[in-house]
Image (tube, rainbow, N blue to C red; front, side, top):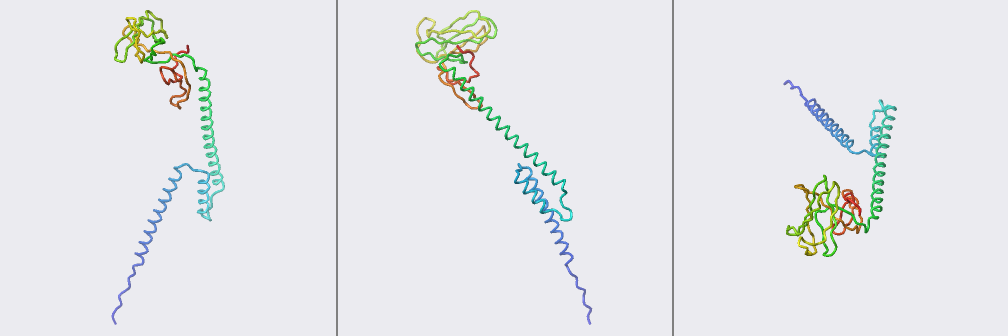
Length: 240
């Protein structure tokens, strides 16, 4: 009788592989779950999200070691505080927006009093209608001799107006629409250039306010000034 060879089973090896696979799968699942939880927590959590997460936590708890009551109450208190803070932030933003809108409306309405009034606004050009004199001003930073030149569209000087010694501040001038020879010039847009010695000075022109509007948060309240166009209310140097 031949000796029967012992039967060697591969079950242990298979179980080991299975266990390793299960362990790997469990680790992967745990990692995936942790990643999902981190992703969820990284976004803004709503009350519904919190209740869903808490329900899942209660369902998955170990019956032999349930969630401690004090820990449960602490979580509820933390979320309640967070929810109240978020609501307060929303309310403050809404209130701030309403206050800003109210101030903007009030500023536009109060600025309507400037309609048909003459104002001085910054401008390096002047529109001459062929009849009415052009009124303007020069911002003199320090006292000294001031001169204003009027140039045509080609850059040619048509009129030089010496203003003599002027004190610091806005000093007004008027151009009658004539050149240095006393001849009337044609209507159109002319350039203004003011100097004090070798220093260039800022010029302003007078115009009538024909409209008031709001140009958004960047521009704010603006005035429509004849001969100039839209000008921010903050740029008005003087009301004449």
